[in-house]
Image (cartoon, protein in one colour):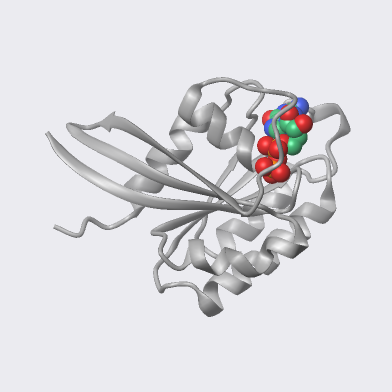
Length: 170
Ligand code: GDP
């Protein structure tokens, strides 16, 4: 069976749930007391989809200001970036637009961009409406998904959609 290796990095503010998304995808579990990422962490997961094995090499970066300067090291080598905000904090949605700008200016051309509105289990305290959020990713042809690392909503689908959008190098 053919094997594709796909480098993906996660970007976004501290606390939006980047590590929890990776943890949910790789281990299928959720830890409410997850430790903050220092610098960056690396994990892999292989998924079978349509007679192909998709091996995701995932770089989870720290959102703290003092680590931001390191992010280019990770997104420059990535075929895709998942930029995460959380639906109960409007500010995190504004920040993601800065990440998109930075990727467009300094990242490799044709990086697949996915925007993930995390913590969608917290719908009662939502600040960013799904309809409003969707216009922005649509305008830049990014993948958009609202998801919950806690409830395992839409996680595998997000990674498979990313893989579908990354052109094959064969
Ligand atoms: P990171 O700094 O972006 O990597 O964020 P973390 O993955 O460390 O998550 C920050 C906090 O948000 C932790 O307390 C997580 O348990 C919590 N969290 C992450 N994802 C979700 C989610 O989908 N729903 C809820 N309710 N909490 C979440």
